[in-house]
Length: 306
Image (cartoon, rainbow, N blue to C red; front, side, top):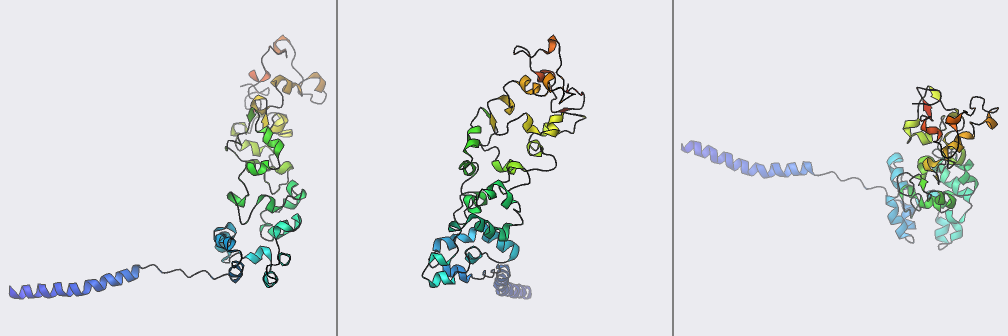
């Protein structure tokens, strides 16, 4: 019995000596390995002596984060402003440093294109590029107020120039841009496309509209020719209209008769106006689409009945 108690005491004593060692070793193994500090940027350190706020905040700038993520290299002040040695030695002489705000718009675009040319190749030929609306007209590298380094969120930024469009969105029937449901850039690419008015286009010219209005996408056994030939804009005004469904005319019948009339029968031989008292076009009669309900296209009838 005494021998058993002695053995137990020795075991407990040994455990008491070894447990602290084991805990210490476990804590040492679990300690996170400190990350190597990012290499210091000598240019930023130098610029920071005068431009401390800019340099301090640039670490969170998308230019810095994305460059570090994809190339392992940081974007420095000199990537955009050029070599700053003469500027520094001249006591901050602004004539000896590149300031994008004080150079020609084309030079600003060329400067940004050194990195962004692959993503925005159409910009020089876009309406914005041709009008000398430079990159920094919309973007602010250091003081961005919105996503994408924009100076202001959409559509406020777009309205600074497109005041006529702002008025369209204030009409009774409009796409809900001001309400935040969609954005200008959902339909337009401000950096340029191969289509008119910077519209995002593909082989099917109606794809911009049909990505939301999928019920009209088809394909249809019987297609309405204007939809294919002229697109949605043949009948609808995209931004806003005083007419329901953003139609180009107040009366649906007037819109239909632009093609379906005897006057246009030579130009549209298959679009002759129906005649007879049941198809009178007076204001007190129902509109064409009361019967021709599938006007965008039909799988049942060549006259677009249900």
